[in-house]
Length: 312
Image (tube, rainbow, N blue to C red; front, side, top):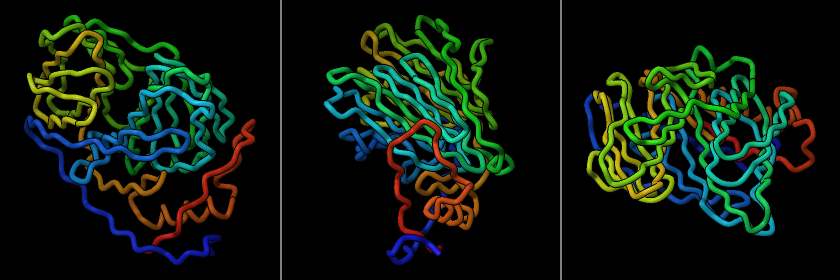
């Protein structure tokens, strides 16, 4: 029995739009969403009509903002069926999780956590008051066959950095120009931070068998000559061998993509799953403090309460 006194809520899952098999310029407004310990984040995906880009199922753009007296802390909370990816442009965070990890992350470093059948983690702000906090957190949906794997955590202090047609590119996931990211993936993925030197159009190679999206993190950019700012996700579809990028000096964009997952993916709270019963069980296990979701060693903060149970 759930510990929540509230009645179950009816949950209806919407079938995501299929990937576009041809190149498109599909614009989606990025909504501001409240976040614990911060004023808001910009949630680029999931969108109502574009819930996946390859295996990527979530992208939150945090900041930029100045940290006040209370740094951004996210209390202990559970995940299943996904990988979380943290990338900072400014500031610092301390990651702790139930497999025993305690890792400080700074700009240019990558935290990559695999939830699998279940993990608990917390993030503690380490940016001093008055400092700048700016970053991205993404989630990757694990394919069905891998959703029950053991939880794990990776920290990569050094990533492949390339000069591609005059652009500074840091490779978070996948491969580019013979370089391969060290991050462990379970489906074909691509993720890169791209810094643009000027307004000249430059080409970033792409895989025609993958779908892609672009989000501006800093400054203003143009994609195939179309203006783009941090309020819009531009979905590019498939069938491209390259994308043309330009921007004001030091404008920065995130390009994500991958092979279409080809599976039904459901996302609720902090869970990715294929059967709603999986999420209902995980929610109950967290609410009842069962062994599936152990404590986080070294973390003495609170834990996020489970939301009301659902029926479907």
